[in-house]
Length: 304
Image (tube, rainbow, N blue to C red; front, top):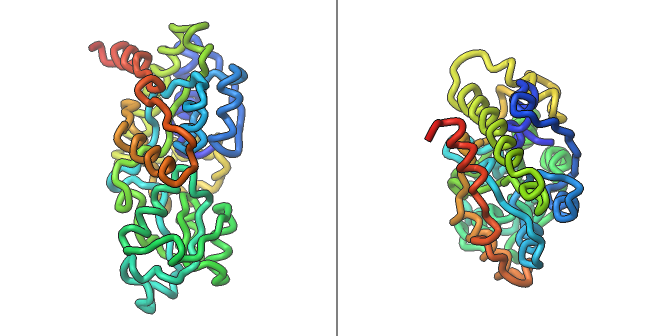
């Protein structure tokens, strides 16, 4: 449960699903990849998670999952993920450019998850190879501690941990994800094979409710100038980020208000992981992406 799912949480809290005749039961998974088996077997109808090598591999293996909408992207100015560098390395001038990362210890949660492509773009911009840095796989909470005690020098992190690193003086937000990979597709919405077959009208109405929630978040948080406390309370109710005071310090996630999907980003990520051997064979994204339900939902909402 992360802020990337804000559209779902707002729609649920404000009764939009109920208005569409849909009763929602949330099932929590610790990673997006773990939702894949549950989706494939119809144990869950809808999955929201990060783009990953595991997702592409599942589709390539013939699992009839459908990507039905885009959720979050690294939109300019709205990238909740960032490359954080230890504060003393920035203040001393030790790290000024990407090439200065040579020999440093860099942490990332995974090389095959949505943050993996950023790692390789960082290396590329510094003219570096993987062997030129020391890579550690760490969970986000551990990264803040590791930066603070000097165990690592930099990390690919997401909010609220970026804000925590800044507040504690452990690290500086050196480059936002929007600078490293503009408009990168980070999370998507997936349907199980059975859901739209069993309930085609519900497959549309789920997205009607979702888009209403996503547009509320987009309008009130990303482009609103008024008091955002009501929205922060909804996010605090559904996510582990309970401290309302941390929300104004966080860079908000770039939620796409119309469910737009960056196909070039998906193709680029798949090509990267295929080249690295993380995906045995390419997934046919043309058949895996099915936007008919999203288009129908937009027509219902916008009267087009």
